[in-house]
Amino acid sequence: MNKQNRIEKQFCDLTGFASEYIKLAITKIHFRRGTRRPELLRGFSLIELLVVISIIFLLASISIPTLQRARHQARAVVCQSNLRQWGFALSLYIDDYNGKLWPPHEPLTGERYWWFRKLRPYFGRYGQSENLLLCPMSTKSLWSYYEIQSAGEVWGTICGDKYSAWSFWSDAESGGEPTHIGSYGYNHFLKAEPSPRNRPPFYAFSSQWYWGSWNVKKPGAVPVLSGSAWPETAHGWPELPPDRWDGCVNRHDGFVNSLFMDWSVRKVGLKELWTLKWHREFDTAGPWTKAGGVRPEDWPKWMRRFKDY
Image (tube, rainbow, N blue to C red):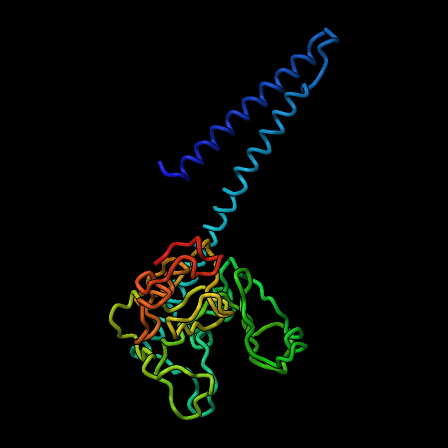
């Protein structure tokens, strides 16, 4: 019997005991109220009342964490279901384009291609794809359009965090709510090799890093979509520290859910992210892995308790 089953059994035993105790106390009260002897006309004694209150507090202290854990597990299941549906939409796109992927940006204008816009036509209606952009653990945006304007930003993307979604505005003149909000990030290197023409200055990655097509070795090691604070994950350098502003987010108790190139969906440990094959030349035994010599004290304090990889 594992730890969780033992806790559940102890909780059931304690609940049964509490129920029997309270029933006995109530029976005792009924007996006292039904008697003709006035000296026995009383309710709970002070000790009985304290025992009942203690039992209630004890049950609450056990049940609340259990309910929270069950709620988190249910949200993780919904999150994985969302990723599977995005995987299905992406598989349709791959079939339509014979395994080829879109480039990072439009060759003529340099405008960035966003994955959720590329895949939106493969859903029955617009709203359906928008709902699937959100992990149940992070469904609301931190910022409004007017807040980012007052901060000096005219348009663009605002980062999310553990419990909030990223926000994307595509039209600076529209105002109002974000055009898109989401909780998942697409692997930036799952694209065609970028065109040198009108290449935006923020693309500092080597052209050799991009996968180019869906035909790769060991697809189960290449992440496609993951829980993220940003619409795209560009984990290009293995030596990047985990406490960067665009680093990992702890959405599922030390894990994030990820879709891989073999269409599998599984939870990934936060420290495990540094062992995945993000691009063709990514070092999966880099300095933030056990193979690369990372020490427990090297991690930020909030990550030290998580499993090492």
